[in-house]
Picture 1: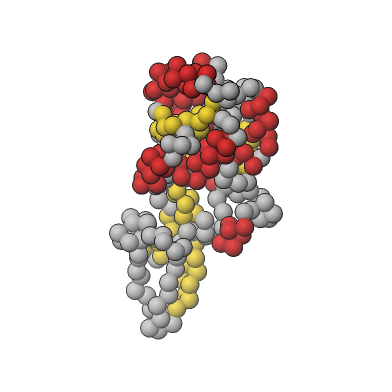
Picture 2: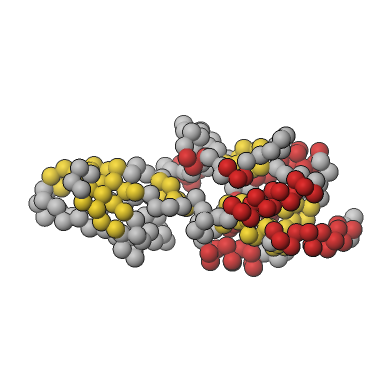
Length: 247
């Protein structure tokens, strides 16, 4: 595990070929008492997680030996399950009201040529092309000619296509939503604010670890205003008033 991480509880680990299974404890620990030999251990990804390491690990132990096996997983929906119904409502509202939709998606090459340096050091990254981590949720798919912009950074504006799309459409107010609240959502919203956009983060269409999600939404009122999907319509006049005060 990386420094500061805790293990995942209630994860199934199987001793392949021997019909033996254990479940990780509250600290993400598991234990198989075994005689000397070579064994294959298989982790079963828990719901809402995808592996960053191989699920099947071969280990050889001798008498009296203790062998530590770590599995890596990242949350595809860190608060448990990102509410697809909220995203559907948000997209339906935008499309019905003529609010332009731009899709930002992370995707990295398998050869690591476009990985950020910290990921190179860790030798693992989510959202690798051709893997499940790079797939978007079906409910968040683009419709019609909505632009899809691929990024290899936390801040979506580091791909100049995003600025070009927004400037071409004459946008000044942005609604930002997605994964994860404290990283890609926050850094993209902050970059937008620094480029002269007013920003609201649609909080019920974002996800993160619960404490990080709440902290981000409360900590940065000078960067963005939080809003829920159900209050976008009622906030419209408020946002128009804010825009009117700008030069």
